[in-house]
Image (cartoon, rainbow, N blue to C red; front, side):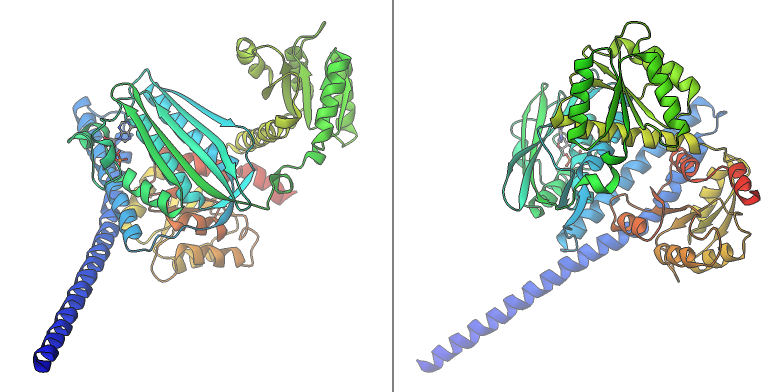
Length: 551
Ligand code: ADP
């Protein structure tokens, strides 16, 4: 009996050992599968980038026969689809292998929304859809979370909304705080479309990998069926929720609630300093002037006022001469004599473009928008001003103006300039050179980070107008190379624009690269127009630089 008993125990133990072994084997196999997928995807991404890069070059040729153009477009479309599939597989395998972590960092919520909205708005315009974003109630300037991941999930859902809605349709994006406790703000994001809708039976399966309601969706809409699976997993990791409601042929609504950590940081000291925005108010109504002065005063903006256009012009001119210029000019639209637009026009003729003009109006400004913008008006505000929203409104207006001023001022010709390309794959360097040639930009090629440093060191000061820096390179990667270049003892070491090239806009690379002293980032395959725009933005005007050197 005891023998039997011990035999049974031994059998049990043996069985357990086998089970454990089987489990271990399965886990190993699963890990091997994930690692294999991940490695393969990385490998496939390189030639894919080359295909898309060459497509981008070929399609720019104006003399293509229609048939060839059609074929090329199909190649481009398929290649882009394949690349997004690969990027999704990489993301999925990172999630499954536990490599994906949710970071906790302060980030500017407003900046994030602006980036998302700019992108989605462009997609909507292309498709003939209306897009609206409402931010309701109070939201902080900063929160703590993983900005990249949050952006990724929102873009994913908004992207689907655009993809599955045909013109004339409408996408709305609502953002508001649902509740708040000591540590977290629970932010609700509602993304609503008037598109094809989702079948009731399919909704429970929507977050499963590779699920698509209709087979062949991938062909019509360029889908992968992984987007929502990835989104759901990231939302879970962020301890948030995601829900879908939909009616076939009416539209779909995705609702996310994501807890975002409350940040100590406020926007005010960072990039918005109300104390430095000296303001002049012009309104023929004394009460309105006093009210505006009081509201601005509450957020720390010191404002003077006057009641007449001519007086305003002379005050502004004097202040400029005193080297204590007004930065912001709030002007009433409807006034006897010169109206707000006429004053602005006169002002722009007299003074340079370094102050901001806002038209105050109780009316809808659509009808005067075009004329006003032409006259040099930067923005509109509804009268009366409200203390609750004025801070945010002024901040946005000033930031937008600064951005436009900078972009406008720096727009330069790229012709005849020279850039350094640091890129280990010859084919990518070749593609980049071809793209640059379209704008008559010359390029030298370094095949790794070390070579890039040494070529930059040997070049004359100012010879390279910019460096295009691949991030993943053997010997010395792009981040390290940039750090070393920034430390070189030469005049242009800190100022030469270094633009990172990385494979995936959502990779950690992007964040790291900006931290390492790179100025901007482009994802591969590089779109010619995006490259030119970035170069124009960062490359200074040659004549300006020469002036500086000479004087
Ligand atoms: P993909 O969009 O790449 O196919 P997703 O995982 O993002 O993959 O979406 C899975 C499927 O869910 C889509 O193929 C589509 O059938 C459906 N779907 C997602 N969003 C919407 C939407 N806004 N409207 C209609 N169908 C949608």
